[in-house]
Length: 193
Image 1 (spheres, rainbow, N blue to C red):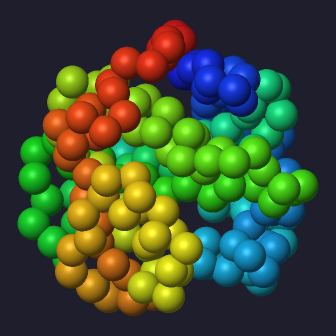
Image 2: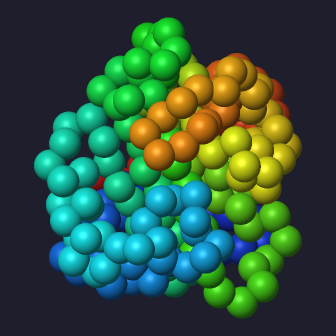
Image 3: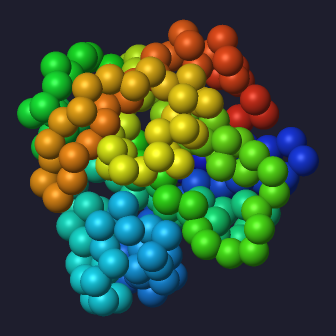
């Protein structure tokens, strides 16, 4: 089920669909078990493990997984969550309106310039479409220097390092006002049923 669409200038239409654990497990498995996805924490998982993990996520009201497509082609995995219902919420003072997110771009041929930045901005617009969402929360592994650099370029403010199951993480936050100033809350976005 498609939940969001946005036309990315120069790139095409982006769609966000609820991940189907059974139908999408093999595709996602191919992404999360590549060496470049080591920080996703699933390198040793089989297809069945990936399916079970996303069946579990699908059963939660507080966590959501989505498949990102650009011009109909799958290009990534996106997850959102309520920090107060996640281990990260035990490591910092959760504010009303905090929304957590994770993004994994799929491997493939050399992507167009700024694809990840454009996709990240579209995903933030999707989350901020909920008027209750006030601030985005991310917690990449402290060794993931590429993600940390991308976050800074996207307006996130780096915060404390915290210990989470399986990793030492760096908290980072992006509030609605900063995002709107840098990227705009409206950009050809359209929510779908």
